[in-house]
Image (cartoon, rainbow, N blue to C red):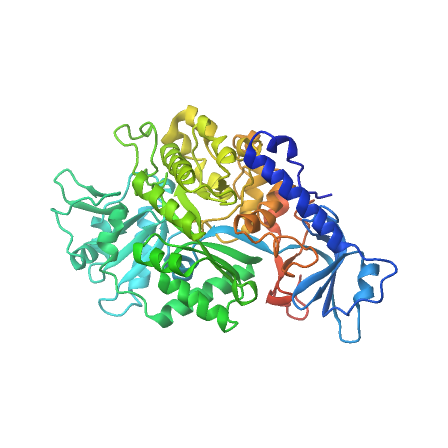
Length: 585
């Protein structure tokens, strides 16, 4: 049986933990009061919809597993037995019986990139390419259908999957596709490869200088190899024609529909421009956004000034849009050796990574955000990047003390042991992506050496201090499928269930924690736990129907689970196509 883990014994260790325990106690009491039906009360107002299933997991400690949920006006009014739920059945009430299925609260991805996903769905897909030759072949195939001189964009190459794990150079790509500018983004989004035509369009030559927080890789003669890391990517990207408003709208809608098909009802969009946020606003205002979007403002001084002046916006358009947080960057990524480390990379002794923002900048934006009522979410992957972010937060909170700030560090992948307890001490939420561990474990030891792995993807170590961990995927860096994250969280294995017993298995989550990490904990991390995250009376009726029970099937069977339907506010936004007559199910 699922229950909200009792973390009070851990939370006593810090003031932030004691506040968390009090919050959990108050929340449980309120849920219990809201969910009790008096036997002497008059017949309740009929529900619009009653949903029944073999097992419905509510993520509500007062009734964790039920047989039915009653819904009215897009919100849960009752969760309990099917017999009790029928009290809410009126002449116009619809009943959906998902016999043989399992229902869970709508899933949240606490860190994704919606516009990046939308455009990635239309670009050359390089994910899984097992060699540089395969990357080039996929680009050549696209070039055959492209207009003369059209820019060709691709996403997802990863040299760590190739026989030669060194970064590629542009030469073979430029020779194979000479007549189109080509820009191919690495899987982590922190490096790109440009061919000669693209570099010429961007006016990049031998004399190009590394920008602050970026690096241009060069040959022994000083010529650009075609690989641009972190902020150096801007040297190339400024030459790419920007998408039209209609192209952006189409891309965002494609991403939303794709997310819904995987059971996602909520996404924390990690860093968007004012233009994209206004597109979100337009879609939500016109009821075209089938998603609860928690959108972080990208680190642009003009955009931040605009939104800070406007003030935080929450649950707009019937809970479809939140704009009350900021996305900053401390460092780069581990795969491209841009993550900032306290000591050099084990496989690149002259390199300790990159700080892409100064500590003073992180602190100053955090101070301004606190004064304006905004949350700050900072990308930090390396142990130095995480320490710099924590130090900046600590300094900002001394300047502007705010009790319920819910500052976040996005990724928190590599932590020095001394910094692990600081998250709870400062009230900082580690927003992590468990699927990254499953992707990175093959080569993380080469980057870090054995000693630093003790602080790598350290979910259990963090949970033991009393924090929560909202889970995500970082799509399109990883696949959208949230069950990959759920599976990784409880097994620390890849999709093939390797290695046996899991990689550093002592850092696993329980299944209860893994489900919380994709439902109630992301809601809390978005200041939305009062309206979403569990199937509790008064909250939005967001839920997912699965074809098997991920809380009880063998771990190796989890990724065989399929989404049958996704509901937001009691309305289906995705339903699996019915098989053709006579087809095997």
